[in-house]
Amino acid sequence: MKKTALALATVASLAACSAHDHDHGSPNLTVTISGEGAALTGFAFPSASSNDLAFVDGWDVKFERILVTVDDIRLSDNPDTNPTDQAQTGAVVATAKGPWAVDMSKPGAVTDIKPRAQLVPLADDHDHDHDGHSHGATGKDPLAQPLARFDALDGNKSFDPALRYAFGFDVVVASPAAELTNLDEAARADYADMVSKGISVLYVGTATFKGVDCASSDPSYDFSKLPTTVKFRFGFKSPTTYKNCQNSDLRGKAFDGEEAQRGVQVSEQGGTVAQITLHVDHPFWSTVDHDAAELFFDQMAAVASPDGTLVTEDLEKLDFTSFKDAEGAPLPWRSCIAAKPVKTGVRRFDAGSVAVHPSASPESALRHYADYVTYQQSTQGHLNAAGLCAVERNFAAPR
Image: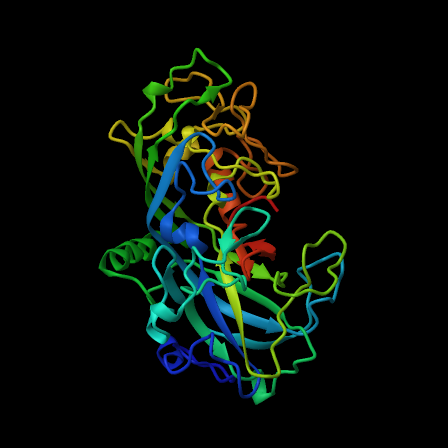
């Protein structure tokens, strides 16, 4: 792995001291990555708690692999450069170079740093952010994958604990040069396929319909013609830069229209952890409004192959502004959660202010459901569970 001027520890070096044990010594910053509990256990239906995310239309979704490549973790001066443009910062003051390939569906190598018995279980003392994502009481996943540690800024300059530093990172196309952090044999084979096809994020999993007593916006529609088990494989060619992330760990006053202060601030007593968090539910969202988004899978099952398999290209057949099934019949809404009244009319998803046109270039508008899903997936990068980042898409997509 390429070293930069800063003191950067690899995962192997991190084994000597846990991200949870950096309580003494000079200020430093350890960067980890997590898909939170949903990446590890999927989305159960019915959910264990009303606070947990679940697919409204009754699908239980489990992941075999969620592979991603991260690179260029950056710290910059002055995250508050422009109150109305989060993407703007001061100069870059430190960079950690990867790339690192991670399987978000597996516990990270942090289990080699500190015995699992000493970690806080994901199911205990958890909290939920505005999207219903569960995380530890500190906002961090104790099973996250360590990526890098900053012991100093570029030029061996010390951190200033009085300052906040803008935090950013890239999700990049899979690379043969990537460090394969926690990938098992099956994941390594899939990662090689990602490299050959130019994929940056890969979801492999199974959706199983488990809804009962469901309500529909069209009681005459025969949902039994949809498969009840779908094996999906979604390869997203969506390299994305996440800039100047907000930090849900900070308690200072945020700018108007933002949910938390920007940046990271290291402790003068020792180590601080910055967790890159990928919300794995985003590709299944019903709207670009993250405060109103709900999860649905019927529209995906409707275009699965007869053997119940589904790939990203199958989603190109669908008009997300008015979904139809494989036979061309309008697809109604369905709710299998009593607390969520069924919506009216034909199922349609909301792109907000993002342009939509089936004949446009991919740079100017969303053309079909595959574009919509990829656009949503590219918003999944966060800091410390819920901190929103400025998003720069490095692929053909409307801005």
